[in-house]
Amino acid sequence: MINEYTKLVIHVNPFEIGSEILIAELSQIGFESFLINTNFIEAYILSSNWGKDIIKNILIFRNPKFKISYKIVKIIPENWNLKWQKNFKKIKITDKCYVRSPFHQSIKCDYEIIINPKMSFGTGHHETTKLMLYYILELPVNNTKKLIDVGCGTGILSILSEKKGFRNIDALDIDFLCYNNTIENIKLNNCKHIKVFNQSIHFFNSNKYDFIFANINKNTLLKYISLYISLLNSNGFLILSGFYSSDLNDIKKECLIHGLKYCNKKTKNSWIAVKFVL
Image (tube, rainbow, N blue to C red; front, side):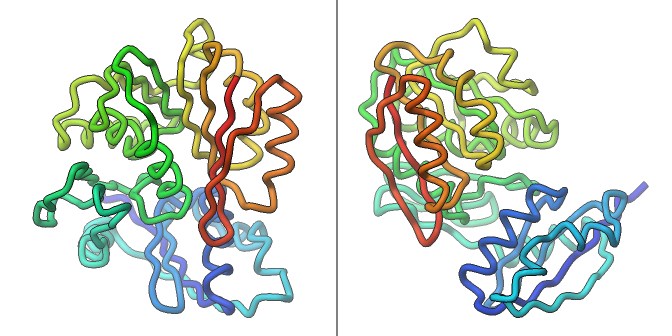
């Protein structure tokens, strides 16, 4: 049986900020992947998860600051995959770090990351993923340090961490498709030091880590910050993203309440990543 997908083609103006808000909202209500074009985005969801009521849950559609139109198209996965490969571009993170897919030619650089996205979040295209990668590139490496990648998606953060020199990495995602995708990408990158789990963060409540990465969304982060902190070693670092710059005060307040110290932040467009230390 072939799974059928529904594509939502959305034109939004102003586009830059509107497309970012749309992707953030749609990713939380069942849409699995996105293609960003010049002035519109294409969002994909399993037809079995699609319903016209979904439109009512997209808040930006009711925001008078944006002019929005859309159309609905049913497709099959083979067509989607062909179009994804056609539109998926190599990504320059820095001069030393590039992200590509298996169908791209190899790139000579210090850290080449190969990602077969399979509809998982974390290809490196989105600002929040890039911001997290920037932080990892800056981290001093000690192969005795232990880190965990919460909501690993494609596994991209864990993969770069191993390429940087970390040797004790746990990656987890509650989505089974993301779990399998991470395993596939680990093999593509010949990684040997990443353990992957299809589990909730609660599964790790007896573990301790020196670094915790979480690129999720504001509400989930606020819900689990206290649990993340309980998993940190003394002088351990919590690095968060997946939310807007305007949400920083809420995140910072929750972290400070639980004893973390604010270190610094990185921003790109309206998105932000932030680092705390215990």
